[in-house]
Length: 159
Image 1: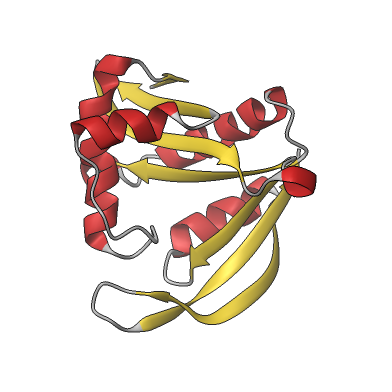
Image 2: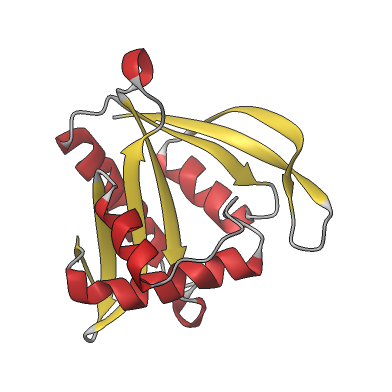
């Protein structure tokens, strides 16, 4: 398993994996799907994007960017997506760990997650194990695909 910066030829796999998470409707706030062109633009606009590659196949990715602007621009945010056929293999841990290194290298001072869905227990346990601190809960802050609502949790990590 290699975590590396993405290349242009990775974009179709990245779009497929990203859209899979959007379609599941349980983690990302986005409702719109990416296509080849919007995916290229979206990934190019990030501070850093990386992929998890196994046996020549892209099996996961992350995007890294500022969480806000101006006086809060030193705080990073990231999103992670793993191909459903490869989940449970600790790829997420490798992606999160790499994103923390890349965030620090890019000059960020903190990482903040704004909306970790309550039912995303594996991610929450991973973040806490890596040293993220939960700073609050927003009741019913995330609308699931079925129209029900779940709490979201906010986390931060000092780089």
